[in-house]
Image 1 (cartoon, one colour):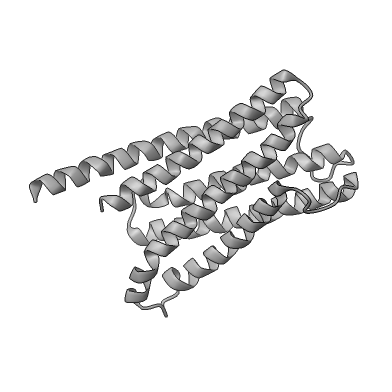
Image 2 (cartoon, rainbow, N blue to C red):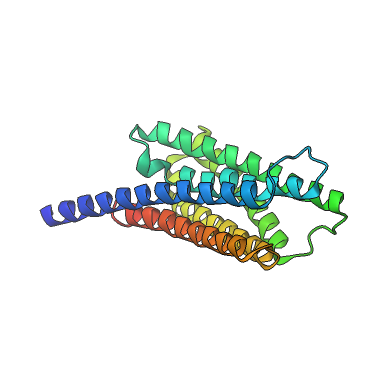
Length: 224
């Protein structure tokens, strides 16, 4: 019994450390994305007459507002030192903000396509991205109804929790994959070798962030 308690405590500490690593990767990814968009691509402006500045809103919002915020919401149970209900509220609200910003990011992509006279939904990136947003919206509604509204029975919540966690991580990693395909497209058309390398490094950091988030959840769930 004592050995099990010590082992559980050890893995809880490991989960917290991996979550802290994820926070560091969050900041690094956010900075890299800003450097790329501001230094190499001329800035971010949804109201600009320059289609490229309109487009830049898309990777900015989808990285900062969707992928990174989703990851932070997933980590809320590991990193917010408050009671479970407060953690659940933070988890739900951060996810909601991420969903709203993700929808805005999709809008920015469609606006860019209109301005640049580019057909919509022709790339693998767009298919993966739209799928991730749609599934995430359904996942959020399912979580709200099942885990927040008082009508759901505790047995129902307990039975649904593993599937909710698994589906959430799967959708999160799908969003990471969508980001990689988008970065590959932009890396192929980079104006310089320096920009290409920066895009590639940003993509690596997004993957590392996704792995860190998933690992923190796995450690926490496996040894509760």
